[in-house]
Image (tube, rainbow, N blue to C red; front, side, top):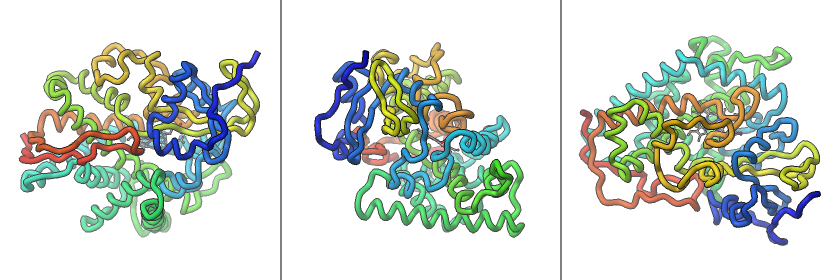
Length: 415
Ligand code: HEM
């Protein structure tokens, strides 16, 4: 027996996506106490799904594919065209291996070291300033980290411009009008810069270390033994650089958590395991990616509902991380919930779910954790600062979200 999926009647809900922000799916699904809800987005029938078993369905590659699922405005700003996000099957697995090959213990250790060094250098500069806005500073700090880790040259005079372009790409997909166009221009500028570097590495004008991201992207061969088109190699290298810069948002949310839960700083200083729990809770609790889209490869029935071949399916990431069926008091920030957390591949999904190698789960999960380890331990143990009056609240309506003030600090001292 199949049951009628609860659905929005008639109207297209594209505007609601913008209005309801992170709670767009959660609001609908939880109201009906079901894991699925049908609506219309950009005039297409869409199945909205949320929760652990929904994530398991979403990552079933027999039933779901990615090619064609991503709106073009997301490709033209955030992800770029022809990148790993849009591939399926063997082509995806082969390209994904390229990313995963960078995530070695040595590579991650190097990333930790670079991040610590950049924090220390940045803090020395902040000591000379009366006031800083953490978000702006960390965008630049992580642009330096990303480029150094990937072996991408970054002249000092370009740091602020490149950081700004990465941030515009991250923010652009949900913007309208001039801000959306500015995001597209930021992507074009960045691709042009990186294409030139890929060319230089390929023709030997620039040397790069063989285990660096720039070298791997420049010389990766596809399944037919051909090098990537230089534009796509650039898109993939930017798929390393841009998301490292995006970790700045988690760092600012971490500063928010330190302020709201001051005991966290002390606990982190005293206990390595608390640092791990704090990082997991920052990734679970704070908003980042709201949802993901895929296309049903065939007709199938899920939880008694019929999904049609070609139908768009959207997985609720924020709602799954806040699902009361999995997380007790999901709207409380409580790092200790991760003390004995065993978890599954589908319950904590800020960076997607399933398997890193065979599916689309974010290959940057370990680098993200490494950068956050280096950053939060530095902030807790070596950064003294005052937090002046400001509005550091954040909105669940704005995607991507960030504390409104950007988190202003004054009297910063390295200790
Ligand atoms: C702020 C931290 C990050 C967040 C919140 C995040 C989130 C995500 C999400 C939600 C996905 C989509 C998963 C899917 O489609 O199923 C993804 C994919 C991806 N992420 Fe991340 N990410 C972060 C950091 C990173 C880092 C540091 C890197 C690289 C060093 C990275 C590289 C990628 C790539 C290449 C993909 C596409 C994977 C694929 O399609 O197979 N991300 N990320």
